[in-house]
Image (cartoon, rainbow, N blue to C red; front, top):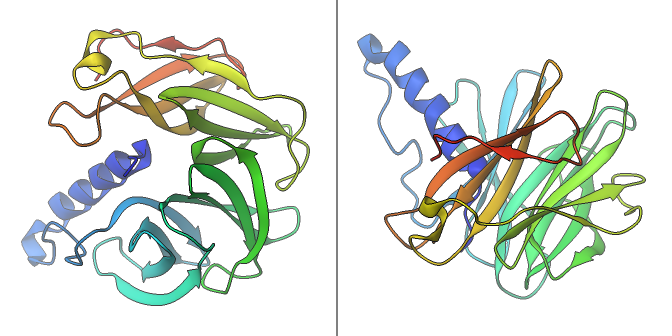
Amino acid sequence: MQGKAIFFWMMGVLLLVGWCRADEATYTNPVISEMGLADPTVVLHEGVYYMYPTGNNVSYHVYTSTDLVHWTKGPEVFRPGGRNVWAPDVFSNKADKKFYMYYTAAFRVGVAVADKPDGKFEDHGIIVPGVIDGHMFQDDDGQYYLYCTDVGQLFVQPMETPLKPKGEKKLLMVPSQPWEWRSGRVNEGPWMIKHKKTYYLLYSGSGADSRFYGVGYATADNPMGPFTKYSGNP
């Protein structure tokens, strides 16, 4: 199962929430005791958090919360068919008010669309073959970029629309720091955050099935790179 950097960001948020609410004795870890869940992505919509994790390897369920601590399991929202169904990313598109799920299935990234975050997602098919861990980012100028993993390396696929790739994907990063080599040579699970004019690309490194698995980040002044890895990673 492939990891996603957002998982570790999410856990950090939940730990902070737990610290802030410790006097109320409301927080325990994990926040969801169901076995097998990993790689969550979270969307905030109209005061409710919607979380989509890797689950049973064949489909995705949605979980809801109003405080990031107490979660309720909702319906199955998408089943692409087949196995190796991992690491969903859900993007709320302000232009058309639809929700786009970028899913990994059988080592390919596809997209499914819904009118609401807990509705049934309609499959629009594979958009980038041979990759995993798709993550959609929209820049301030409205341009779309889909970040993904291919054989332990990070790529970006420019997108004409949330459904349509534009041109060829571009290699951004390869495993280059010693910690990324401790168990295999892996960079995966990209997640983009923009702060002011700097682009922060979070990612996971080393083997997901080892104790050496960790999270690093790299920065750039353009969403297409070049990116410079932080020397203090992970």
